Amino acid sequence: MQLSSSEKGFSSLNEVIPRRSFQKWLIFMFFTAFTILAAVYLFGDSSRFHLSTGNKALASLYSSKSETIPPTLSPHKPHDFKVVALVFWGRRDRTSILKCYLKKNLVENGGSLDEVVFLVRTDDHDDLAYLDEVLKESSSYSRYPPASNGSLPGQASYNSAWNIPIIQNGTMYFKIDDDVVYINNNTFSSMIATKAAHPEYLLVSANSINQPALSWIHYSLGAIHPYLPEHQPVEYTSATSWRPSTLPTWTKEKSGPAAVSSQDYTQVFSAPHEHHRWLPLRNGTNTDWTPINQTGFKPGGPGWNHWTIAVQEHYSFLQNLEAGELHRYNFGIWDYHYNRISINMIAIWGDDILAHRPFKHGSDEEYLTMILSKQLGRSAVVDGRAIASHYSFGSQHGKATGSKQGIVEHGIEWSDVLSRYRAYAEENVC
Figure 1 (cartoon, one colour):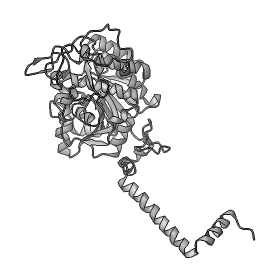
Figure 2 (cartoon, rainbow, N blue to C red):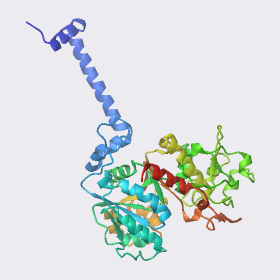
Figure 3 (cartoon, one colour):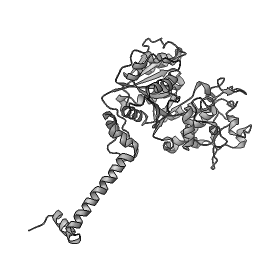
Figure 4 (cartoon, rainbow, N blue to C red):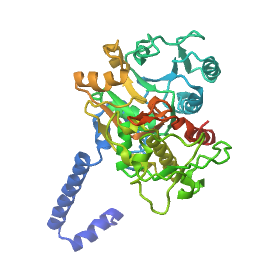
């Protein structure tokens, strides 16, 4: 009788291993494999565990072909709920950068956003005229108020923006400030995945560059590089190149009045001249006497009111972006445990907005991340994979920043940071 190839294999194997020993070996291998798989499932990568236990919609966000840890996210969103961006529309020098990322992430362009609603927070004629032009670019765009010359009431308080009648249950909303000037390809998908899988979180924030407490986290993760301002003016031709690798190395000759410690750059240090650059301290120099050394894990600390820390963060980010090293910023979920967190870019369910508005506090940020989250026992968290960049706070601009020793005349607005983000967007996104 002819034996099949599989029978021949077992027959030859039985010649080497007795049948009883072979059975014991099979049982041993089975339980070993089962134990390993169980350990990986229970104690391995948390994002895989959350995938199996979270909202079913989460499954469609993960690429089945990827074996990377954490999993690669698909740009496509689940089909069982809408995703709408609420963009606080204002300054066109910022929004002209942000709008490129919004358009790229529309569902009609293969992204995650079903709609973008521009919440008008300006009375500036040119800002409004620019919005009218942007609205023509997609049927997925709309504005509120709908009147072409209207803006939201209560300019001194952002709480009024949450009272608009278009909010709906079952819709996930992204609140985005007008000066978010970079959004990574994975950011929307990751935040949608995290929020859908974790209803216990009140809101999920992006992992934002230039967010006060996060500046300390990024510093601790080794994502910040040594940079100092160039004091001597150079001919300004606009930052057509966003790449820090094209910059000369900082030297004392270029520094002008020499600073001796990081405190010198975070007290009453005013920008040396308009459109000034920051230069890298290469050759293995550490960050000890650069501004970032003064930051801390505080919502209103030096990372909020010292423009020099913000500029160093931005230049470091652009360096990491150019080098393909954005992994330096990555972490899992960072729970703020009812401490205040900036809400420059957050994801929140419409149900939670409708159930608790009008917000009973002057600051929507403080109310959402500290007061309401604690009342509900639902934290505000940061998704470490969802990288975005926030240009500036008002406190980082001239006449608004300083210390007991005096007021800073000019701040981040006199750097070339914004033009570098524009150059990157025009080259890669717009």
